[in-house]
Amino acid sequence: MKITILACVSLPLFAMSQAQNAAHDPAMQELIAAIREEIWAVNQMQLGAFYANHRVTSPSLQQGELEMSLGLKRAAMIFFVVAEAIQWGLGCAFWWFFVKELLRQASRSKAARDARVAKERQEKKTRAEKEFYDNIERIMVLGTALKERNAAVEEARET
Image (cartoon, rainbow, N blue to C red):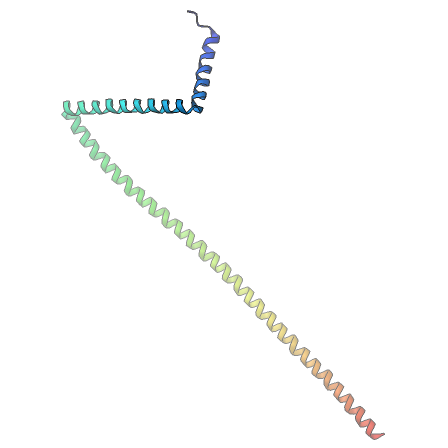
């Protein structure tokens, strides 16, 4: 049987197109999932049998596993302690920057509020001064008008 270049090139393309078709076919997807589960179960059984055989037949391997288990437990404890310390450090740093930002914004808003209040006070003061001087001007105008009227009344009496 001769294998041509065309066959060598088309076989992977054919397999790829079949895989694409299977990806869209629910029945094929279920079949593929069942096959994967079966392969996984067989692998787990073989792995379990391998470990069971070695544990039973090899006490030195059991001792090595025990030492490795203790080493792994120590390493896991160190890892979790370091991870916890890092987590606390990051948490504290986050809260520090968060509180620092809140304080910065609060001081900025307080400064803005103080500036606004000072501006309002200045406006009230300016308005009060303007009203005061306007009232004085009105009083002076009224006083002048009263003086002129009194002068006109005096002139009218003299004549």
